[in-house]
Length: 265
Picture (cartoon, rainbow, N blue to C red):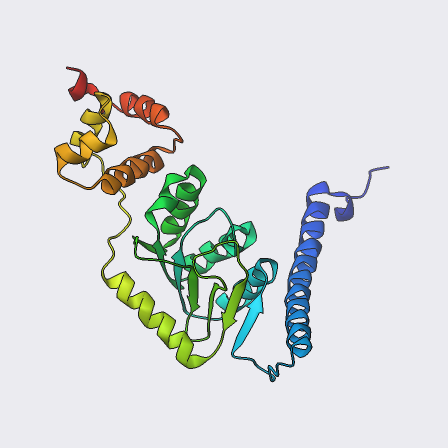
């Protein structure tokens, strides 16, 4: 007798069902985490005789509490403006948040990020930022930034509680006047900051020739009449372009691409 086809015995279908159920549980857990954070913040305020009201203008959040709060609010605004000191710590490390951020950019959310140049020194940081650029995020570099903050449309600002300390808790601000102040500060820095450089093929021939000769960054900067940070930024962009993590690997990739030929003649 032929065996009937039971879709419940299909391993792929069972995995899809498990994934759907787990996704629902994760979202419910995220909402619970936010509620727990709100309760802890309210309890802390009561211990210090602070009346926060129904919708406090300023709340202190731990780093664990900040990530789901950011994700929840960011899903309901049409733009975000982010100032980034580091990607090694803080709410931005959450992989789920980064994935949701890229998804929102693809769907048309306006995203702008001001990035401290030192962030580009890390291989993983460059790869993550490149993925967000491909999703549509606009990025500029600025060494003027002194602390991290995120402007979530006209709704809120999330910033470090301790100025310039990425390991500190966060402050969640809903006060409209303060939100506008942070937004204006971001606009001012954005207006004077250059875009993250992504070199086109052929645009860095002189730089590549000097790298092939073993010249140090300081010598390259003096020869090309550019700043030392610009040299390092352009080398980092080349590494990002070729998907490599070290300068030796970059040299191998450039050789394979035929871009070191002129330097070795």
